[in-house]
Length: 379
Image (tube, rainbow, N blue to C red; front, side, top):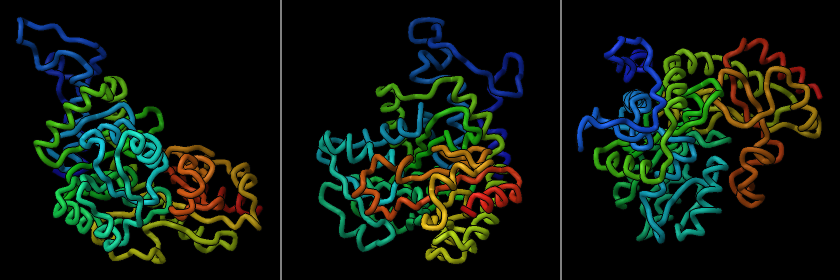
């Protein structure tokens, strides 16, 4: 089945009472038993819920995993995955990952005895050199947030597998439409479904997709035990949003390519980061593991010519806001907003500067978006 069809139909038709075309919301907290030990497959919504189960089946199908856990937020998904490990275990990850992930790793889990190496994940020799006897996981974010650096999933997961470590890929930026990490050896895939999978900026959620049966058994146990599963109504919203994933991603990307080319030629822009540009240094790797380029980009604004605050204030169609992946266009400054929790040292190590602007390109008319950027860039 094509991914476009999977997005619309998988997990949807579960109502056998009235044959509802749309998945019903089951807002109940608990389910009654027919007899001791006998029920209809559900007992308590934290553990399992029919609406959430439909979403989990859908996302697992899109990613090509064996199963999925839908969580309350993207960070809840990441937190649950980290409970596969214990104090004293070592994790290798990038020095340019999402600020919220960096904060969880560096400011919370480190204090619980976890060990982390934040490295340049593009350098396979650096990944190999970072391995320790207690390395239990390699956390991959590709493309990275916000500088769109690409990590070779196949090579890094091979390194993890040889070391006996789990490999986990944050696939939020690409969605399953543009990138499928399981095809390149990943053990688990995580998403902030708040972003492209939902696509409408009206719900927060996360997902863990499992590549093997034993991982899903452990993962679903952890999600239940930690109490981080997604509510039925939120799951229904994400399931509604995912139906249009394919046409949305295509529209996002069409706009992003036009905008990236415009920005790259602008006199007040120092550099543009976007996988769809010929200037991206990892073109061959992009072609190997990605089916498209997505709609996230970043650029370095020449603040000697255009003040950062003035640029944002002049924008009409790009809201100054964090998050990404919705139908509307957003722009923000990672140094002061989404990645501020990394601290100055972490920001500098990642390559983020005070002039870095991250853009989530929406599905509005590309001409209107370019005109908006053009007038804001005049300073």
